[in-house]
Image 1: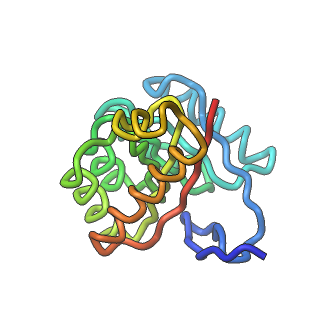
Image 2 (image 1 turned 45 degrees about the horizontal axis):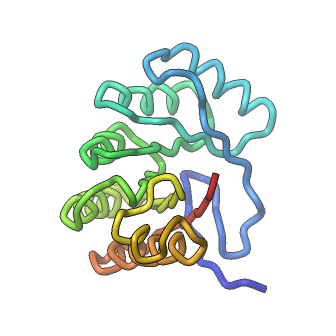
Amino acid sequence: MRKSKKISVGNINVGGGAPVSVQSMLNVPSDDISGNVAQAQRLEKAGCDIIRAAVPDIGAASLIKTLKENCGMPVVADIHFDYRLAVAAVKAGADAIRINPGNIGSEERVKAVADACGSAGIPIRVGVNSGSLEKSILEKYKGPTPAALVESAVYHASLLEKNGFYDIAVSIKSS
């Protein structure tokens, strides 16, 4: 059996022997608040346990609060490029933050996200994607190889741990 640590995304335990949970990403444009709420409610009715919503700009952070007010599921804020969006999503009540290490930025920015999530008591999902690996790793491995994906994930999880943050989930995908 593989060893993993249990983390909590809202009221749902993930890892560490917890039952498998169903998570879905909303695919309605983030500025369509009513459309996102309707889709989240349909997912909840279908048995979804956790929803993930893109936060592409500061205005989208308000979607997190609205989803939490209208759905009974934990909400994960999916962050790309701007670490300040993660901090805003935490303030809006996100139950977890998903960062893409290939585009979140410097160690200082990762620390800011770790500090915000640590203060709120919520986990961070390090979501490594072959399409956005760091340039240095792509050069080292001559492309988005499995080893490159693992190195990126391990490096970014270790950055969080270096900053005293340990409630980490890791996901890796190549598409």
